Length: 197
Figure (cartoon, rainbow, N blue to C red):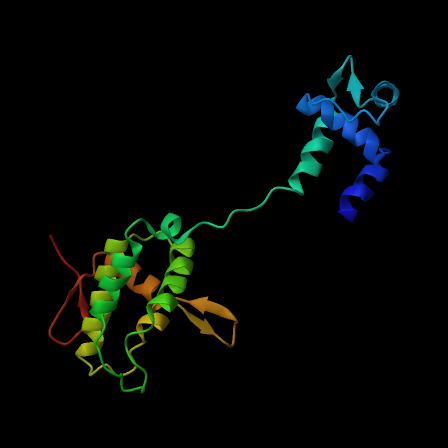
């Protein structure tokens, strides 16, 4: 609020003057305790209104002050991930084995943690659920052939904090990219092979 008052005083407007100026924009009558004719005369002499209309500088000032009151609405999970995101998270989770990995961590993570990670993933990347599911199948198949050694949990596969750089990395995004490039088949040794049509 202090910033708004400082901005008004900097351009030479009192709160009452701004109130009258704003009433020109909204076409709402000011409170009777304010002498609107006196304030309007001053606004006109200072170039804020001209012939009963807002000038460009007054429109810009009102927009600037209005911006302080605009709330940025956080998107819901449905808006970010689609209507059936809970079903898709279940489908994703079913791809992972139901036991502990050689690392000692369970392969399947809590669904709420996955929802938070998927929110980040879909806000950061432009892949769809089909790509995510197929890329995840590729990942789990590859590590199943290696006895799940060094495989990430379902949560860390989506995103994991790199403590050295303090950034998030996504192995899922890497596998989605591989899948999108057509490397969707494996040979018996667990390596990717390219489809030739």
